[in-house]
Amino acid sequence: MHYKKLLNSLLILLIFIKCGPTSSNDTENKSKAWDLKEWKLVWHDEFDSDSLNTQLWKYETGGHGWGNNEEQYYTERRENAYLKDGNLIICARKENYEDSDYTSARLNSRQGWTYGRFDVKAKLPQGRGTWPAIWMLPDEWTVGTGNWPGVGEIDIMEHVGYDPGQVHASIHTEAYNHVKGTQKTAQIFDTTVFSQFHVYSLEWNQSSIQVSMDDSLYFTYQKEADADWKTWPFTQDFHLLLNLAIGGAWGGAQGIDNSIFPAKFVIDYVRVYKKIK
Image 1 (cartoon, rainbow, N blue to C red):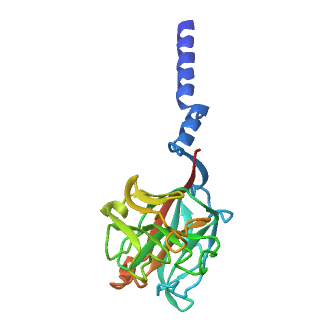
Image 2 (image 1 turned 90 degrees about the vertical axis):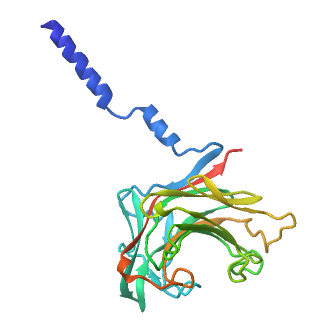
Image 3 (image 1 turned 135 degrees about the horizontal axis):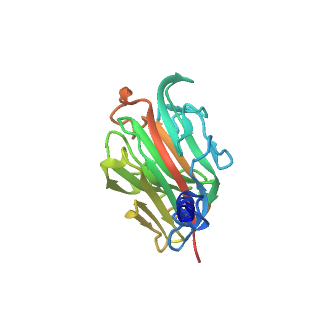
């Protein structure tokens, strides 16, 4: 009888150890999953709350084409940007809204950074006419003439739906930009970008910009020896942008397939790291 009681007590203890609360070591290991060798996590959004953290992000709204003849109207509505299952969903819809035929969302980080590593884990929308992007613009347009493209732009990920699986990374400056046909750019191809999450990363320092997908480096822009603001305006804080455009000079070059809507750009997390000195 005493033996059975002792055995039962031991079984209960074992069950509690196995199924009890997460230990501090487990929590520490989870946090370490964010850490990268030689990098320190300084800003992040895991999108695991009920609503968008507007202390971290702000909306840009409007429907004026955004310099690219885009056809969507960007709104602040939940229909176009919401959190679900630990993800941010940017949702483009076919609807008449403010004299536009489509709606979507465009989000800017409130904080900017000079140099660092920027990771965005995302799954892309599929369909002709979609144009999702993960990119960066300066907080203050003070370099050179104070106009685009002289102030600089870093495109970490762009994808146009009529060319499925072809992911683009680019930079734009006064000397190198798509208006002149001189932009510096590269591509990586993967048809799973619609069905699986991938991590799109930028590493930016005083002398180079490098972009990778799942840590596969495919684009490098090196600062030139005699660089001035026309070739290297990347000397000030830049903020992150997440958006899903519809149509436009590039995204709509082969038209828009209206059967694809609603189209969803799904972001699992955004993480910003600084180099450990």
